[in-house]
Image (cartoon, rainbow, N blue to C red):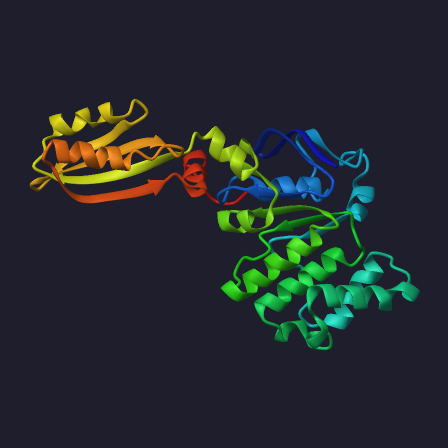
Length: 314
């Protein structure tokens, strides 16, 4: 288990991470989500012992980053946002280098290499120069170096950045497969990335955690609502404002005159569907409905609401 406890990280006067706490359970894929500059990369660098905290601590299997940084590094496979590859090497040479750094016995190298090549889909490029590989294959090589020592924990920072849709789908599938055996933290500012891979998500903004839970938890906590846009003729703003009488759970979010029409935005819980009653009410008042369009509050809406500020990456 990973436990981040009251973590603070400052760069001089810049407060990149502000007293955050969260846990990652064994075997869980946690999505670490936030806009650029939220503090995601800084937090991951502290978890992986590449940075020391200003205050607070991080515990990995009961080891802490202040006293046990080398032991923690051996438990973690890390793919930073800037993929750490040596482009003058071919893939085989790079895997040999990784094995030496991780102190993997030579007698076990070949068998582990074959496992990693199969898992990461690198069989066809094992003797190719890394400089010749596509971005998608470079990401696969980066994942291969992260898992070569068979770590208990994988930490992946923006693993699909710069990839095309087909490459993204391939890397997502690979991460899902790895998550069956390992604890994974995947960081991204792309909501779809987290939705496609994670069991749970933590959303960070301006160095602070603003949400923590499953998608269902977040939608429930946000009290997801549906917005209904009505464009009406033969109506007035005063008469349309009374449409709330159709159902006590309907609220009038906005109303305005647009030419010779009235445009009203209604909001109500996602569990409610009062469209038939609204249609009947419009008929009773002899309104002509030019448009009735429905938009359910999505996780994107929740994310934007929680991370409205944004900024440059820290």
